Length: 155
Image (tube, rainbow, N blue to C red):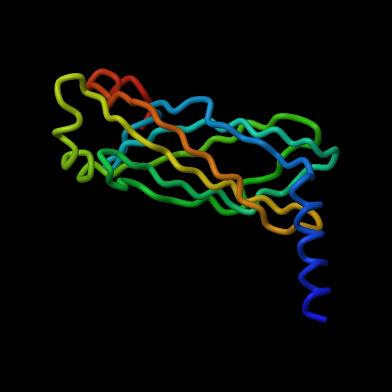
């Protein structure tokens, strides 16, 4: 009986692995604003839904790393849905506390930017399969805001 159950599980896993799934990628990470306790960056994520029906997004989780250290984490519960047979653009605000940026002074250096790795987990609810996480990882370099940009953007 256990052997039959294992065969059924393997068959189902094989069939599910061939099913088209939504695909996503980070298109941009840019400075958004400065507040009294953090700097906020905005990651733009493009998600393509191969299904004709919209798919609910359960949550978005993110981790922002620099110099091999995690400097910001967060989650966005219930951010909406992916449009059917379309590409949906999602905004993921990343809030980095000032005290963490000061500890990265060595990496910031003279060019006033930080090298980063942004890991995002996009948790969606696929029919029959259940919750499915689309993992994304994006490396780049982001400028720290100058004094003029701090006062030219809304806080």
